[in-house]
Length: 330
Image (cartoon, rainbow, N blue to C red):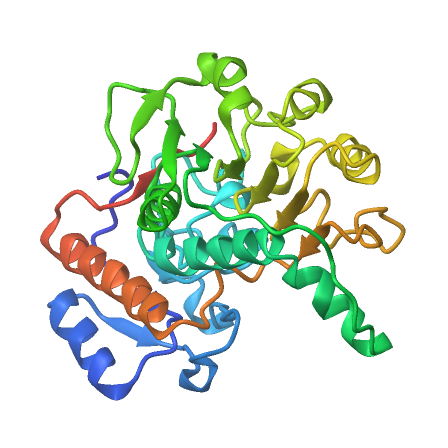
């Protein structure tokens, strides 16, 4: 499993109810567990986590998104379970010790993020963002032609949990779905046609909606660049709920300003927060939300996060392989 300490201690930062704590105690068997989470955080956008000073020297496992620098203050730390799907900041060299285990909450956010993306898509198709912006000025004015998703094509770039959920929503309203993933031989629910990243330029021309659901890696940085944005249909809609740097921001701003695409919906930006002087803020065809699609507002998301962590505590106590294991860069 990695680093192994004979005397273990789990520091659990999840905001648990009393009954949930009891489940974690049973799952951990004889491994002691300190519960330091605040249950009043349930339902909030994000949870906070910190290992108390008196526990840092003894903690072998931490459940929660503690500050990366706090990991080095826990010399016995052999396992970190995050409640986020993205773990970029913990994968950097020097954050976790070589041989330690990093697991995430992949599988918890598919419904919340995909529904957020789907709502943003509908808003742009039906000009709802334009009407909402006009309300403070009491503008009783038609915003122009709307479009229907029926018969359109969604290109889903990144077909993991979130991308697959989004694809299924699209199919429910009559859309055809094309998926892009590293291994196109692996199918994903909701995807009609799967291709590899090397086919991106070939399929962009068919896309009415481009849904970006990729992590931040050197290969995905500015994946949607100026050249690729220029190849899109004039009614194309770009949605990004993966990582902000997957899109070349200035190229997107230029395409919107020049009317070369219908609109963009961004829950993630480059950088974050998006600077106040970014032209995207003032672009009427751009709908921006502050990285909230994957928050904990949905009760099912909270339950899923807790379930994933509980399963891994059970595996940890039994000496079994952990689920959602993520690589650590050395």
